[in-house]
Amino acid sequence: MQYLQKKVFGYWGTINYTSNVESKSTRTEIKHWVELFFGVKVIAMNSHRLSRKGRRMGPIMGHTMHYRRMIITLQPGYSIPPLIEKRT
Image (cartoon, rainbow, N blue to C red; front, side, top):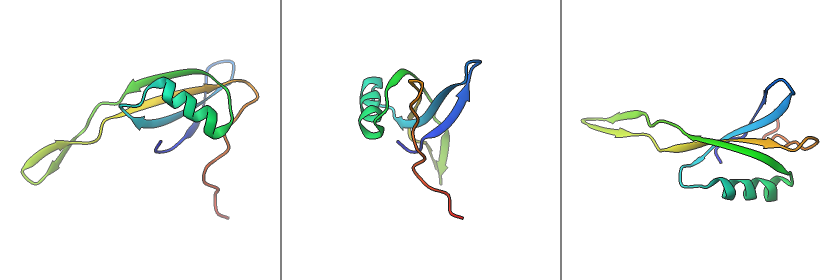
């Protein structure tokens, strides 16, 4: 995972976490990894593939890497602590 970002969606205040992962990763792999690594219970996962962007390197036109964005919903009472603490 590149990063984990916390977002609050919906009317009921459900807390969702978003992350970009490799496009070859499956939903079950990511769910299993999040539950083992953070010790939380995942109740829902949504995903979509991000569109590739053009990248020019001299005369050659290439593309950026292909990612999949995962939106993870946790069971109430669980939360993922921040991975990087802010410096004061």
